[in-house]
Length: 534
Image 1 (spheres, rainbow, N blue to C red):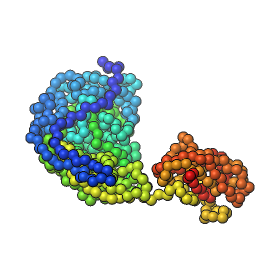
Image 2 (cartoon, one colour):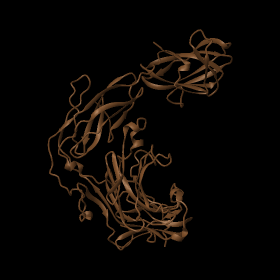
Image 3 (cartoon, rainbow, N blue to C red):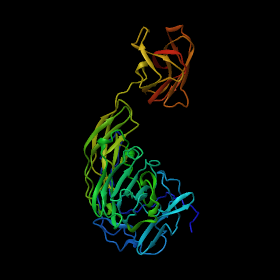
């Protein structure tokens, strides 16, 4: 009998890690006006490596694969519902964002059952809870969550138009936001309308099927629906690879040259924990039209095995320094750098980025955008490689400058805006300047990126001409509250110019986007000028 209780998966943390570390000496980092020591540290103690340190009793019968140790497994060597210590269920209908037709049930033996050494995830043609089909979606959330690993699933796929089985992974923490920003890893997807192909795909904020930019590979597997095959993901820092029966058919990685203007997490959010999902969907945007004559159909799984490396335990030496540290991009308040990946005797975990000896952030990738900098400023940038044992390399150093940006001091021509709305320019009739911004109507605006070099009290002088009374509001980085409102009197016509001065207002040092917005339109602007009140 169908269960009416809908169990929604709760995304919690459960990450298997090795807890070994080496004793290191961490040098102090001093300020600019003191003697500065190295940012690196030396390996002082090595441990005796245990190549089974990560293996739980449940997986003790499984052998290592090279340095990969079995850390989580389900051999389906029992009878009944899937092991509740390992699996939960995502339940419900409503299309699942892809126009799918099935309802995923909760712990229903008609849709998910273990017998004769395999798990059967079965889709049925039956009306239930407003859907015309039922199936199951098993998830390992809070029972199997991993950062990096080798995931193997031996499975035989269903057949027929409308079937859409998947073995895939979603983030546990959703650190970078909802889908697709925190990522998706598709280890295996298959649709019955294309019976001899399987697919491995990743989705991120910048690369996903909603944008048509997803990155994926396909492999011909002529017996996918009639024989068992091992579908596999190998995932390490900055790198993924998909396999069928041990044969690689797709590699994913991060290329900084192709992501100059894309944030690291939008290109590669795969530095957080993910959990495993196995489901059989019916129909939908990819499953397509459904042949009702094929049901029931089953995704049959022989085993699920997850392996990890004890990176820290294996480590015997500190990583090398990065090479070819290079400026990739710069703006008035950011600098993006890239470098060649460093080598280590086991694996580099991450890179620490320092700006003028202060830690600014870290990344598992070989590029980083440093933000919240001051314009017109030269910075010392250091990058340090760090391995899983906590050993650190000698720093690599680059001196780089942010772009020059205008300050608020001095005359700022109205036509030199960085962005605008509803704005027109023409040759000015004023005694100074080449152009003026004309026909400024209500809600038109001009934006200027400007540096405030010194905190203090200021006034704003507008050089305007107006046939009728008008008004502007000046905002700084926000439309919530203007920093000043200026009433513009009628000056006597479009060719009659006057200076209009605001009341005093306070500004703090920093880089801002200033917006001049017409709350009441009908004036012409030639230039404006901030003046500090002494």
